[in-house]
Picture 1 (cartoon, rainbow, N blue to C red):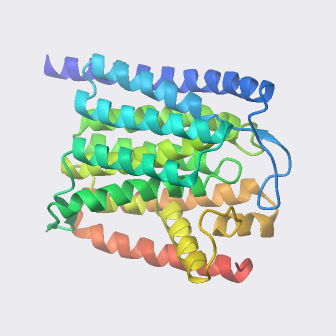
Picture 2 (tube, rainbow, N blue to C red; picture 1 turned 45 degrees about the horizontal axis):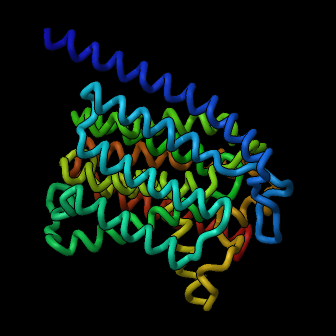
Length: 345
């Protein structure tokens, strides 16, 4: 009887995931038509990596379908109400501020204030970050975890936005990251939390069909910031549940974390204005050097697959978590060095 119930729930989840992917695919096309009609376009400038005006705001489809999927999952008992409410509300609020930025523009100070507020609320709703697992040990951070968690979410919101600059990159990374997280959470027995990234991998896949090079629509701030937020929120919830370690999330998202963080540090070191648009990221420089969005996006996906394997190894045998993190660090460092030789900043 127990096996029958479990099988039925899994069948419902597969159906929900399939419907989410199809709905996202259809709704992205509708959003694209709306964006073209109302000229919600990403227009090329000297800092852009594309050459023709392209509709943006595809993240609307991802967020709306994901929110509906999470709601259905909560009603059917697949997702815990607290996790669905916290991550769903945070995702939609970030979508609203992102859409406003896409269509009318929002002052950086206002945008940052909203990011910090949503991040702190999320950490509070998820009961903070009292412990961080490091291998077989745990580092007690206590109340400091609220600060670290808030800063981590804010940074992840923005780094995903920074990295959404060429065709297919953010969409493919979202599919791979959410898909890997969902599988690992299922393997760890955290079926409730696993349902959320499973839905998000599906909706990101529906969007990716339109975003794959040559892109017909971009995520826009409405989608990129919310996706970054969800990855960080899932990492905090998973750490609290003692499921997939937070450090494994960092390994899996390593391509974006490494490029965005190193680029930010280098720009600060040379005195650049942080609010000024630029084309200094490694993926942007490599795209100019190769003259191909598809090649850079494909290589980034391949690297993330390798990082996903490392994250899985560290998750399933936590004695190997630190060695996996160290291997990922040197791998990404070597790749950045190679990019610097090919296309220096």
